[in-house]
Length: 231
View 1 (cartoon, rainbow, N blue to C red):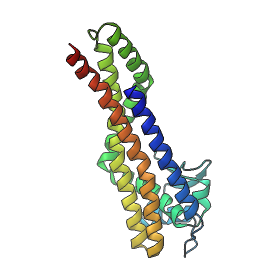
View 2 (view 1 turned 135 degrees about the vertical axis):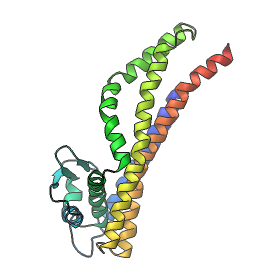
View 3 (view 1 turned 180 degrees about the vertical axis):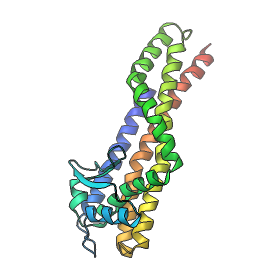
View 4 (view 1 turned 120 degrees about the horizontal axis):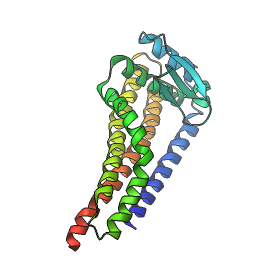
């Protein structure tokens, strides 16, 4: 039951944060930039200002689907961010360009995460089945056969590590975005506060996910300590 409580609470908090984020963007979508620049134009200017000419800015379907793809060198903006001329759209567009800058400058945390991607892609295929099988074997054997469970916890630890490495990467991209928006006078003081608040709530989705994963990991590891106490 403890595990389901952790998953349930994490899911509940994630839903709340997601709703707040969507409401923020809905409200901020009605506040237009004084310079009337769209998200696409913001992204292209930030790339140009930083001497980056080989990255394209394109529109993708969906909501909050914005991301940078280093494989084909594209800044992918959701349709609304791509077209809207608001501080929220400017913040998201600049944030994704912040990832482009990280890639260009060889940001260490980004390098580390990229090195973990192929390992995580491989391990994630087996994590859940190994964990569940390990739990079943562990309890059916009276806690004597813990190898598979330990292996599952090890695989899950990689996902937790990945989620925490992602946090400073997202924070840094937001910092780069906000600094550029402010220093280049792309946004006014009021618009800057809106942009900052938008990125704060966007980053909260990553924070909730990371903390939820950590709570699950602590639960799995606590199984061994509780089993020893029973002995």
